[in-house]
Image 1 (spheres, helix red, strand yellow):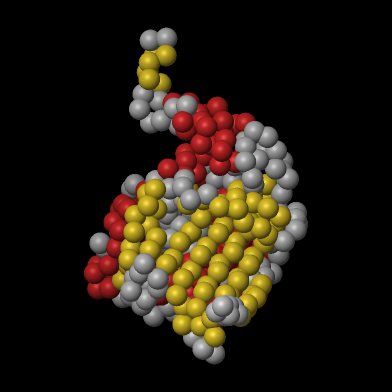
Image 2 (image 1 turned 120 degrees about the vertical axis):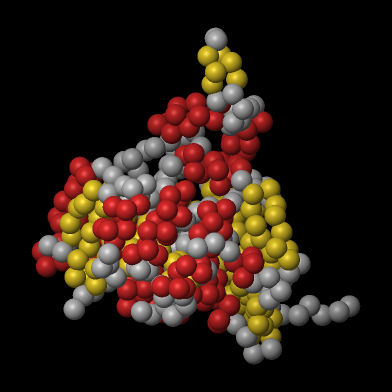
Length: 399
């Protein structure tokens, strides 16, 4: 007998997750839910065209609002797992409904304050014997599980660096960037607070700082990376006292940082309203509206690059372990690299929840609840290769 999955949000990531679960999740039934029935139905029709008939017949569309608690709880009853792909600020509402319906849950996450709000529901989740796992997408999500996998490959780990970016395969003006998710969300990551480990302690630092140059194999080559918010999730607290440092930076093509910095310094990204010809205007709102259309490039193919570097000891020798992933738009399915890496990652966790592979109960951190080795094996099942390279560091001779 297969599993019954419930996916909230029929957008890009929810649709990709449904596709993944139909192929790899031993699904008996997949319910794709959205507040907009027509939107959900279009996603279901797309999936039915892409999937073998035996898999496609198991998918259906329903209408439900996450803000209608009673209706959501009723709809969730009997599900093996629920995945939330709705805007991150609704996740506490979904978690409350999942706990009341006694259904394990995972979500895409992306905001540490919302995750902490979910964590306050941990006792209630434990009481009914389920796991709720926030931040299961790409970053936060897959990035942190690869870090755990890397740490397990070493005998001792002292530091972890994570670099990740969703990029167009061919950069175009004005920003060398193609919008792969909500522009407002991107700016929140650029200019929020980031949490990292420094000298073994959780440290809050400013986002959009610490610019560095980074190189990848072709076709990427030279890129840049800078601190952004959200992607470390709860890892700094989990690994405090165990690691010396743990940090994350977003990867972009060269020049992107300076262009955003210029617009910020000119006040075009401010949240404080200004008066223009008698009307009150929030500069950032105007920028999101105008710039969003200019950098959408829906016809352009994307890629996702992810690099995790774990430093420590192996066989008593100092080493660096590089874990690299490079994923591209899939023309066969039409799923972007961002949809694949985000939706499939969450699908893996949802399937683990349904199968009972995750033993922890309560609202639990991804990095401690999800087994990293099996997760990486599941990535390889989906053709998403993680390349490993261990480099032994030679000690410099003293002069």
